[in-house]
Length: 544
Image (cartoon, rainbow, N blue to C red):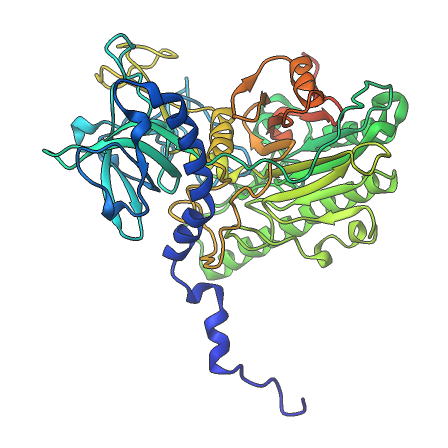
């Protein structure tokens, strides 16, 4: 067009993602998960049909506004927690300065024993202090509260635990509304869970061989700067990456021929907290350049230019590392993270090809993935033997942990700390427990858009689990954790038992994996696709 770019028609503005309301995504989420929640609740009703409390007579109510008082009912809606954060104590657990958590949970130097996590608070739900739990749909909301199931149970042992849910979780509850208070007392709560996988995973030939296909998952490469632990110990993150590269590319060292794929779950470039410290100090490894917090605009521009230069160097190091792995024939999928140069709101788009030119030249081997990531990996030569992999950089798990809590009735001390005279100490839930909860929810990011930044999608919720994964992971966690869960979401202890379930025609189990930050721990995770066996490999360049 010689006259320049034409202005878009007025109707085009309606298709802009931010022209929609965020309420639409909650409606789409509820519509997608409703049937699954009802199905799980009805299974409980079938078991409880002979109960003296007539729980089995409960009927599904289409809308919350239609529920009747004093009648056993099944309601489906979105959970809303209303809590006062001013009365909540700080959490008594330590979070590392991992990539995805450094923005949400910045560490503030406090006492010498343990740094104070000023922005990390895990609140214990307490109805006596005014906290309220609601179930909500498009027609209205109703207050819900746990119902004690028998007097012989331990205290606080309820079917509904307010400290195991967050705002945005879709659930079906079985209970009845009190005539006096208008509160629905919940007998049991049922989440959607992932659906039965339409992709039939044929693992009847699960035989351990010397070259069993192995998936390598890593996060937090941290290119561009050494981690704080390296600065204090004298180690080098760049050296550990070189050790990892030799492990991947030298068959005699790491049996590299068996690695079918490498997934990098965010944290490829160093976080701003690792490049900047103190009042205007720019850090590169152990070296720091001091700046004045009252610098004029010229010096501020210089600082910004230095940050841009550091980011460019980080991307260059990351590109070179990927290209060396790809040149050995190992496919790589890169999931962008919180500090990568892409959009901040979930789902994050793939990093642009111009930022990783050498890696993108390997067209058939390098995958620029979205965050969250979903893929299907081939297991062996059989076309029917596939493994579905689902995961993220871990930001969704880090955000969910802020709203889940565990209480200890013990009066006093945990890790030599006292909770300000409160008789109940509060601890944040672990990354594995939070990951397991999202699997039970059937939703990867239940706290979005309330807490986790997401696009206001209206047609569908992109974070609803549409299929059951064989491997479900989260990156940038503070430590390695793994768990096997069956078709019901319950933990399975033995790998042999899990394999037997798959061979006998049952639905396949799912391997849950919390991948530690490589910059913080020097660890990578290996998962054998045939047997779902999982192990961690550690790289250390400092003599103990």
